[in-house]
Image (tube, rainbow, N blue to C red; front, side, top):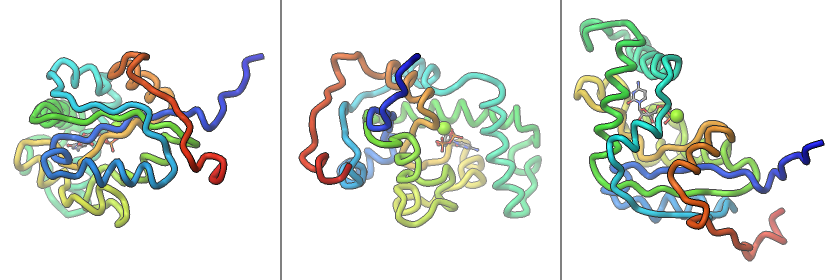
Length: 199
Ligand code: CDP
Ligand code: MG
């Protein structure tokens, strides 16, 4: 029988997007992760290519549709007309546009890619990041504290939502994303001083 995975071994990928880097938020973001008790085991600044970002984000139609649905939800919440705003109310079509703007955004400046390890690292980092739309993100989260964008504003500007960070959504997705952005020898484990006290 396969040994169950040790919860302490869970890993996730966090990317500080170009808006976060340009606004000088690297230190604050890293500090929030570390103070929570999560361990940073790899960290590097890089200028991503369009091809890299294209391979980082899912390409399947369900994911693209979900991007479009997030825009449509924002329009609905504010009584806005999708067709008038963006020329279509088809989530697939909107999703394709958003995905292309996302590639523009992620290549618009350097990013910082970080591997984080710890108990329920994926969910913990998603929680610290906050909801996708900054206008809905809770105070106390990275997106809630540092950004103000939403899909309606972003779509008008023909750009992706500026929301400071990317964080893996599931442990499986994290495995792929970490393998994609880091070679095994670039990831370094070590013991944090408070490990014996906290868990
Ligand atoms: O980043 P997160 O996992 O919270 O959201 P996602 O649905 O996986 O979308 C990826 C990224 O696309 C978001 O973080 C936004 O930057 C962008 N996005 C957008 O610009 N407009 C949308 N309607 C949906 C997402
Ligand atoms: Mg996502």
